[in-house]
Each structure stands twice: as C-alpha cells, then as structure tokens.
Image (cartoon, rainbow, N blue to C red; front, side):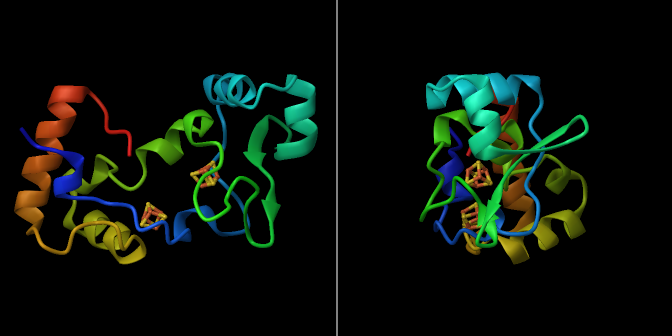
Length: 133
Ligand code: SF4
Ligand code: SF4
C-alpha cells in the first residue's frame, strides 16, 4: 500500500508559508478556521485575515503567513490549498510541474524517479480521493 511518506516528508522549511500573499480561503476554509480558532468570525477576520473585496487571505507578518511559527499553528484549520501542497495533481500531468514544485519544496523525495513518484501519488489519490499532507 502506497504511503505519502514514500514520496514526501515535510522538512518544516517554511518556504511555502512565505511571501507577500497567501492562498485565498473559500467559505469552507473560513468556517473551518473559525471553528479551529474558537473565536467569532469577526475576531478572526480582524486578527488574522486580509480581506480585499471578495478575496480573503491570511495576513502576512514579517514576510510569512501570520500562522507560521516553525510550522503551521492552525494545522487542522488550514485552507484546503495548504493541505494539498505540495502533492498537487498537476504534477501527474506534466513533468515540468513536478520539477517546479520539487525545486521549491525540499520535502519531496529525491530518492524516487518521476515515474515512481507518479505511480505512488496516483495510487494514493485513487484510494483517498485527494491527498492531504
Ligand atoms: S516547502 Fe515543502 S518542506 Fe518546506 S514547509 Fe512547505 S511543504 Fe514542508
Ligand atoms: S495556514 Fe499554515 S500552511 Fe497555510 S500558509 Fe499559513 S502557516 Fe502555511
């Protein structure tokens, strides 16, 4: 049985939580995060979100997501796009996608070939529907 650990182990390098913007949160993400933090939506909005029109993102502090502190401090309530990273299905479709993501994520195994990586990832996705890292 294929296991995520066969192709990925997060090094907690924090690269994917850095930058000037974050992923955007859809309604489910917002509700999950509010529930996880145990605050009112207004409080979460004030403290943690950057809202631009209809787009809700997480605030950036010192160049990284406000929830980053040597790892994700809102792990169970993180947005689905964060949970999906870095094992994005587009890697199965295009070697260049795989290479680009692997270059930015040291957690992706260097010990398996692209073909083997795809076989394992596909097996996991077929079994679980999606991959949550
Ligand atoms: S870039 Fe990869 S290894 Fe680094 S924190 Fe993100 S998922 Fe983990
Ligand atoms: S919610 Fe967590 S995983 Fe997503 S960018 Fe912020 S710190 Fe990183």
